[in-house]
Length: 342
Image (cartoon, rainbow, N blue to C red; front, side, top):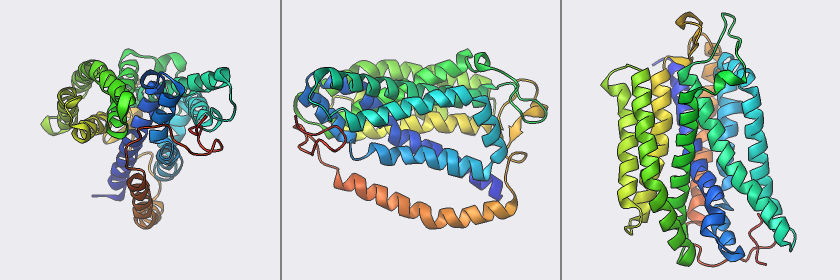
């Protein structure tokens, strides 16, 4: 295996890790007003991700800033310039969502909290939608000129496959978040989370099936390449069956596998390309024509081997510390993540 292929695999792992971890954050953000019908319930829902969400978002920084920029600067430059407006909206969504965690508990005002709840819900919905559209466009294809410059406009990003991929990512995050709430809460909030999961699970499974069929018709790479899409469908179906059957951990694992395999199926369909060009295969971006020098990749490999295990251990410890269910409103200070007691 060459270093170029190795770093493509690393980026796939990073993208997958980001969406598996941040996916349930997005889902909880979308659902916190549904499962928490009063202030106490909303604080319980938000409290499940209060200690985790900012650490999960670090994976996006690692993927975008550290991974893609350093390993495949040509890919990074074309993607981030071509998808500039979409990524700007993504940044706004993530900022609105992050600020809402910090600010919603700063004032004793119903209107104030509703405003930040709306920002949390909207940001948590818009972010996975835009990420899904961006990933879908990598495989569907966008206009790329011979100089590796994006030659299209915003309308070129709004093709049916990419939009459907965005909707699918939103739905799997919604289901992932609902199973996380079932796993992490108790009482009425958990009951509402079970109800929400049961309602969204069949729709999500149908969307994943449609995504898998559509993806496999676009990419003809044989049985092995189709395996992630098949696993995504099977995991989504398993989640439909497991939700509400007192198999909370297994249901969460099933939705995590669904999210992971949706992402992996896109990148498996791409390789050895990193962006498909609608202007002809000669202008496709590949792992070879966008990669950094061999020396840079060697240095990055050493750095990743040293620091990535540290990050994984630290984040695993965080999840272990905050592993218990939440059955009542957190009593943290109002200076925390907006989850303090009234």
